[in-house]
Length: 175
Image (cartoon, rainbow, N blue to C red; front, side, top):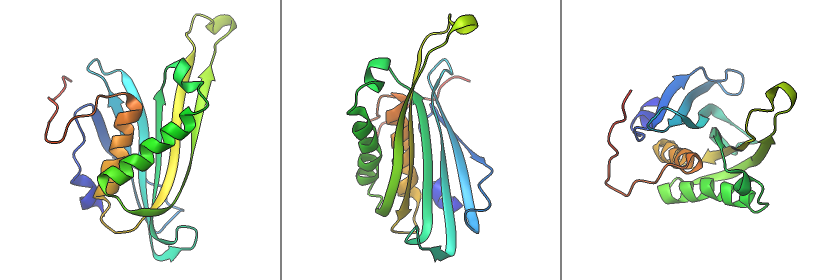
């Protein structure tokens, strides 16, 4: 399972690292954290990709594997206040899964838009608007590399990074 996730190489602006996985949700699990950054190391998006595995299966999953994901990214205020944006943001995930060829069932999740305004001693801060996509689904196969690839495409889309055409590799960024 872990080896399948390691085959997927993210673009240079997307930094992946293994983090502690939840222990009580399934007998086996792995979690990866992501930071998408621009050329000045400014944060564009953050997220988690968690794979849960229960060889006995779980009824609510309708299978033995479950992918649980989370992506949060700042958004422009006019986009985040658009009521149709929820459906658009959810379609980023379903389109990414379809485009990657990642077969799945039992998908569920939420799209959350937040607007934070500061007052009094914090009034000099600008208004912050964020998008958060929380989703889970049950893969139809044990090959999870396509699911990881789809999730990275969701991170890319959420962060505003320009998609790279097939066969094009981004140059490494400075550290």
